[in-house]
Amino acid sequence: MIENIKWIPVFLFQILTLNSFSQGIINTESSLREINNGFNLSSSLEGDIQTGNVDIIEFNSSIIFSYKLDKILIRLINGYEYLEEDKLVESNDVSSHFRMNHFISNNKFNSIYIFFQIQSAKSINQKSRILRGAGYRFRLFNKSKYYFDISTGYFLEMEKYDYLNQETKVKNNRLSLNNFFFFRITNKLSIDGVTYFQLNFKNRDDFRLFFEPKLIFNFNKATSFYLRFNNKYHSSPYIDIFKRDRDLLIGLELNLN
Image (cartoon, rainbow, N blue to C red; front, side):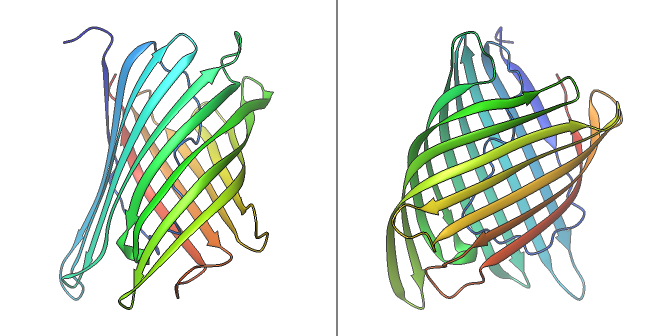
């Protein structure tokens, strides 16, 4: 085994999913937990197969490569989502996100960052979404049982939709204001969450909002049970789709160090 490489396979068995279609926001940085220097890898897998009155095949996966050297943290986050219902493909979505954080001084929490993201989402007729931007994240509160981070930034957004055989192209400059929190309720029970607010720089009526809390119960260091809910809202969709999406997941997570 190559030194300094840690494999952390994560198997997430999905029990319940509601309205999993996306409004284009991906949770790429719910927390900045400590990562060892050198290379790190983590992966996740979610699956659901139903047959009978309704035939459903659902598969979600992600893999995260990261490299940390002193004050620099580089991450590459890749995701895939597939949903087939009664042999009709509803989702066949991919995403790739590159992010680099540079931690300021000796503070292991505050950092400036740059990122680049590309994705597609068949579920909302989105052929492509390309983002590139930068920002600053800082820790507002930091205690042994909880923390609260705020992130501010700016990014360029380019989207392309194919709806009813008509192509729609959109280019926006957006301001972002995000927060990240963690609270340990007991030794085994905790909650973390994220809120993303993305405002169109030239049109204040066009904004996107994403909120995702996650309740976690740790059986031991290697096994945890979680309940995760997210709510996505786009005030001004560019094609005829719903403004709001909701998603509820119940799962089991296994971490092997």
